[in-house]
Image (cartoon, rainbow, N blue to C red; front, side, top):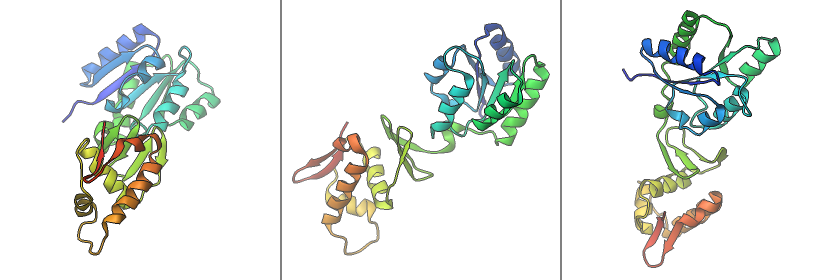
Length: 228
């Protein structure tokens, strides 16, 4: 079984060391950082669980959680809040931004370990980096399992054919495809489809992906390619 990865984010270095030591003793792969800013600079999609302090510097744990939830690549990662604040409003805020659990300081290490185990089991040992196959170019991302396309955090409305054309391009960057090849790859088993249909779909595709449309280049006499 793949080792589960946990990220601990807290500005108390001693607490981070204690959590890291005990979680690693349970067999987890644990990273620690001391600010939300540092955490958000990492590739969070590789983690199976985030443990966040609420009160940290300029970016609080709540703000970081919102950023995690808004990113399609990390929105499924369970989050546990650690905090010295234990009011009802704080707990409600934590759960409203996607927390799986909310643990007040001081706490016992045995309690933390037990809750982490339950959360990971409840999330069926969630592996965010393996949930979906993703094709991308910068902030343009295609999620092949869910058939969704995003630019940054905005989902784009795609037809099936537009999705398949973009998928073909992102899987084969810089390769020139003739109209006939695109028809054969995208319009499989369909008859009486004109090459002009490819041009119409390419035009719509360019428009939908905005600035990224310039990467879909027309090669006169040959066809189209996604050039990077």
